[in-house]
Amino acid sequence: MNKLKLFLLILFSQFLNSQSIIGAWEKYETNSDGSTHRHIVIFSEGFKSTSVFDSSNGKFISTHGGSWFLDGSTLTEKIEFDTQDQEKVGSTIKFDLDIKENTVTNINSRKTWNRIDDGSPGRLNGAWLMSGRFRNGVKSTRSIDRPRKTMKILSGSRFQWIAYNTETRQFMGTGGGTYLTVKGKYIEQIEFFSRDDSRVGAKLDFEFKLDNGEWNHMGFSSKGDPIHEIWVRRK
Image 1 (cartoon, rainbow, N blue to C red):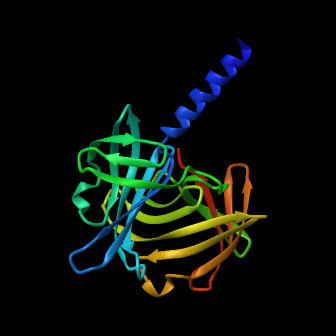
Image 2 (cartoon, rainbow, N blue to C red; image 1 turned 30 degrees about the vertical axis):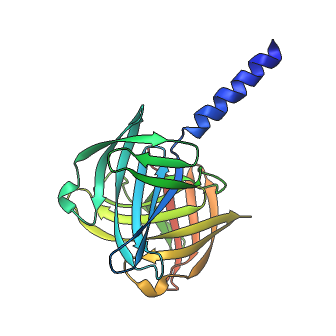
């Protein structure tokens, strides 16, 4: 009897995990001009982002995202940024999903995304907000509740940062790609960068440390400038 209960518990746990949307997903779309766009969506607890870029050269196309919750098979999203239609910022959209272990299908559009990861193995999965930085050894902080935000959202293997303003609906920039966390190192491989396509393919090594809920991000920016940023998990 105990073995049967254990088996049923494991089976139920596997079922729940297979229905989770947390992690990174992708799909490819071929356009009439022959180019192929890669679509990446990252779901963290409560927040998501979608990015679109040319799969051959990393040219940035668009991004949108915000907060979300799932009720059964219905996903509700409140838009915080949208480069294709800024008027959508602040609005709420709903659509139905068919979630399987390795695919998720938008029932309305009939488009299917394939799973990249389930939120592992990277240690930094989740949504983070820039909360401060060190300059000349002095820590300065800023409110994370203001409309102007710099958010970094990570799955287990992918990252995207987005700078935007929910009040003015302004979009300032974004970039993303893959990442690793290994022995105190946080390593990014850039796959798209809205401000400078020439940075696509660059590999950036940083040190990271988690200290009392703060992510200390230390190293050099894509321009070669020294940085020591402080990030906190978004709630």
